[in-house]
Length: 130
Image 1 (cartoon, rainbow, N blue to C red):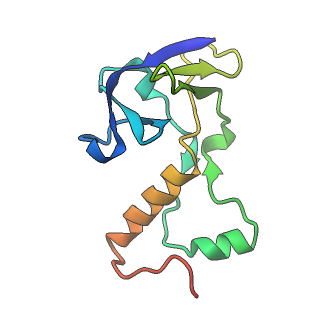
Image 2 (image 1 turned 180 degrees about the horizontal axis):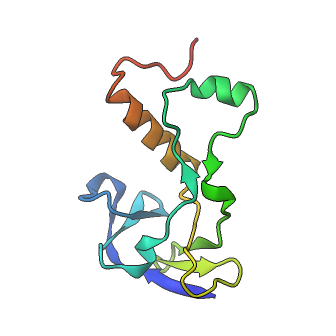
């Protein structure tokens, strides 16, 4: 079931003016969504770690990269049609009234966010030892 459409400006990924919500359409194009866009309010259920860590150690030990908030699971997904240059928020299962909508932002989003968070405090941080 479609919940809402992501609305906004179609642009190149190099031309993004806001980081509010950006939906990739592939081929270096994306939808830069408006803040009043209902679909943009879906959240990921991931908890960002509160301490700096070595991502390579986590991967080598085959530990989960991230944990979920209160064991919540995604109940929706982003459906992209790159030919039409449109994207929708689509339910994966029935969603009750007043139930929060969770989607996966994707692993690259969280790794980039984690790196930005800790690089502010550790500007010479290395991700992996060589």
